[in-house]
Image 1 (cartoon, rainbow, N blue to C red):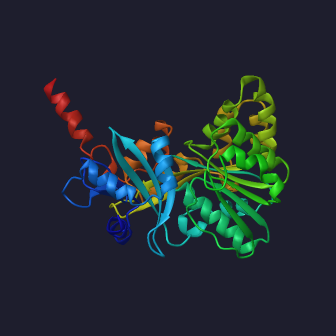
Image 2: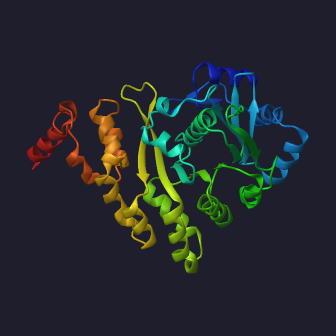
Image 3: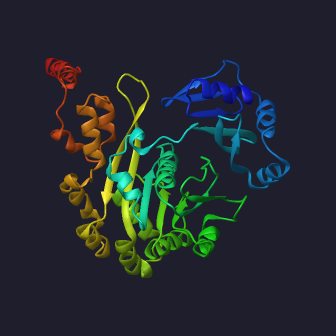
Length: 370
């Protein structure tokens, strides 16, 4: 496994996949690439993955049939691992954790995000699909706070990925199962640990979300992730997790506690040279707070579009900017737009016009056949 890990690190892969009846595969710039031609047998994958586990992890894996953990291969190589069973055989997915924590500007986040990160209290959500860079963004946020603010930061992660060294801040990093039973259990007691900033690796149940909102309401900065695709969906997901009779109360709480939502996608660059971060930014203002309280979040997108001067931006608009700056391809723009009619607002490059792409020829051939 060490050889595979080192190869993944050397070529700049984001992920390594090890599964039976397949060669080891790395993901480079979003594309899957076999490391070797030879397929692994089930006994080989079990031996490779078993060599990474201690006795406690082996027992837990056998009992739960899947396991999350992080591991250091060398002083500079760290991976987040998820191992699991598929068709009765052991398999693993390993995500490379960058050697250094990039700053928010390097990641491609707009200036308003560092500003939100340095607010003293409120709920700051980082959302997106798996593999959209949420963990790296949150690590960069914590790194910024660590470099600029004397405070106590408590993180709850599953597993711990980036290791933070105390600078101006004192940072306690807690890992689910190793240091606490669950996200909800950790947040149940976190306010007794004198935190100023709380990082929640994932909000996915009523107890965790309720505790996070309460912490944000009571003067703490809470940074948390959700697997939602945009800002409006994130707000609705929080409310919908609760029983219907609590929705009105939660809307009121969230209208006060929410600070901002940063929704992310990683989009392939034009020419295939890596990926670029595209973000949707919602910053709570008076109008958005009213919409949350009144259950009108479906109207919030219009506020975001009208408030670009205040740092807000929809995902569609950001994708438009990236395309018009020649950073991403037309096909990526078109397939990622949440509102297909938004294409009418995009300045299409000449080579991407319908006739240049061959669509006009297709129409001519259809007319000729008729």
